[in-house]
Image (cartoon, rainbow, N blue to C red; front, side, top):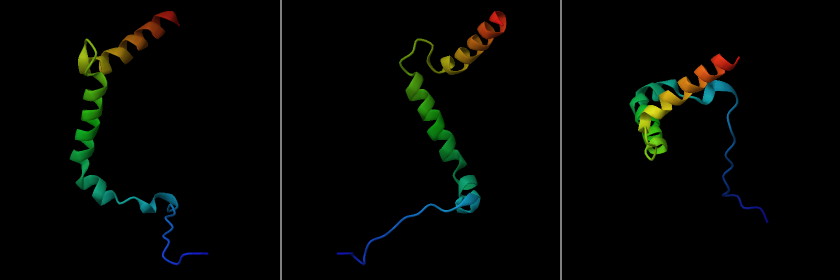
Length: 67
């Protein structure tokens, strides 16, 4: 038995579904959410948030000297 009050949500094709005005309007929200994720991820480490910057630099130096 098929219900007539069912709602089907389908993705839109291409970039037409992105509202760039809303993205620009809420850019501060995206910034704060990203910053919060970084703080939560590296809060327990000894170096804290600086580890997010120091770690890639150290890896780059190690790979540079090895190869």
